Length: 152
Image 1 (tube, rainbow, N blue to C red):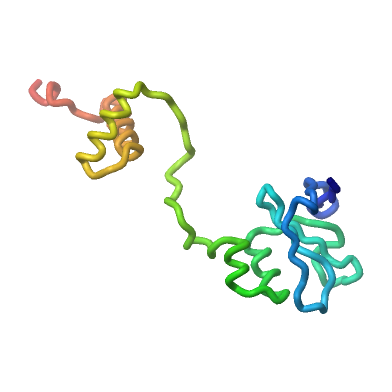
Image 2 (cartoon, one colour):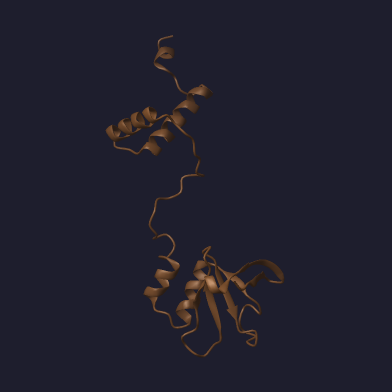
């Protein structure tokens, strides 16, 4: 295992193992250097320190967008760039983030009942739990009027 330090300006920001990363060399043969995609999903640019117009004189991290631009600018086909970097922002698979993820455990019977109620209502278990928590919070804050309270 070899180790290359990565910098943010003059500050050491981390390191990566180039033998365990995917290396993209420029295909245009006009420039020297390489772009690495690490196992942890980070992009590292190792530029030619002899070229004063390049952004780094030592390895530095790039964003996904910067890595995609580098790959396109250095002769890589758009299909390979999308495969390596993923689809453009905003068009990727998956659901939008609602909030931070939390985990908790429930008895199997409770999970089965939640699933049954969610399916009957045409929703998901997660959405049903979110709605139930919102209703509980409204009730605890006194904002929700229960049927018993309506009659008084």
